[in-house]
Amino acid sequence: MLADQRIEVHGTKGMLQADNARATTVIRSTPSGRSYDPNCYSFPQRYRDAYRIEVEHFITALVSGSTELKVSCDCRASLSLSLSLSLSLSLSPR
Image (tube, rainbow, N blue to C red; front, side):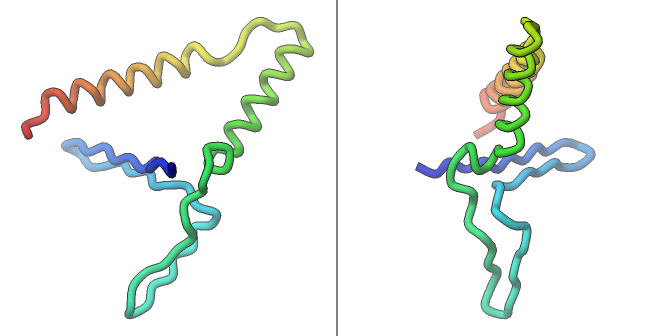
């Protein structure tokens, strides 16, 4: 199953938008429509750099004997965003 990774955040001063990752950013527009590369299929394809950085950090921590892994602040930020989105959804009129 291919998951949709798009997100939009709307506010009183504007909007933030992130689209699905694609192999290239090229969009072809013609009188008959628009075409572009398909979305990257898997998480490792979509987040190649993030996976590489995470693995490099893990290896560095192992080699240096460090027990500090950069995960706690990332987890808190992710949880905070998820809880905020859940609250927003529950309060939005339907």
